[in-house]
Structure formats: structure tokens, C-alpha cells
Image (cartoon, rainbow, N blue to C red; front, side):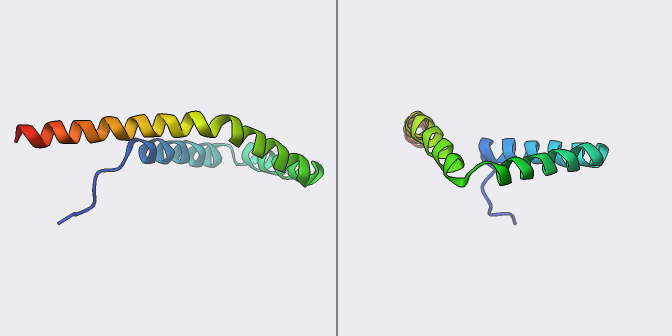
Length: 88
């Protein structure tokens, strides 16, 4: 008896992306290691304040539309749940 709800679309997308990355690392371990090394070097060379500023700017620009979209999606799900509950 599986009482777990079905996975959400976001979970499925993240899982698929993770599987693609894992597959790429298995097929191209040298390239994956070099990419990880390069990313590590960039993060070590770039000042932490600059990384924080870029992250804060991206969050400030992207978070409000994302939250609005999630709110609209949740409202739509609630409306669909009410409609399906009323028809049964």
C-alpha cells in the first residue's frame, strides 16, 4: 500500500535533469571533472560580495514573478479541486 501522492511536475523535472547530469558524468567523466574544476576556480577567484550581489539581484528580479506564477497555479489547482469535488 503506497500512500504517497504522485510526484509533482517540478519533482519529475528535477529528477530528469539529475538523471541527465548523472548520465553525462558517466559518459564523459573527464569533461565533467574539468567543468567542476573550472566552476570551483571561478567561485574561488570571484569575490564573495560580487557573488552575493549577483545572487541578490537575480532573486529580486526573478522571485516576484515566480511567486505570482506559483500563486496563480495554486489558485487554479484549488478551483479544479472544488469542481471535481462537486461533481462526485
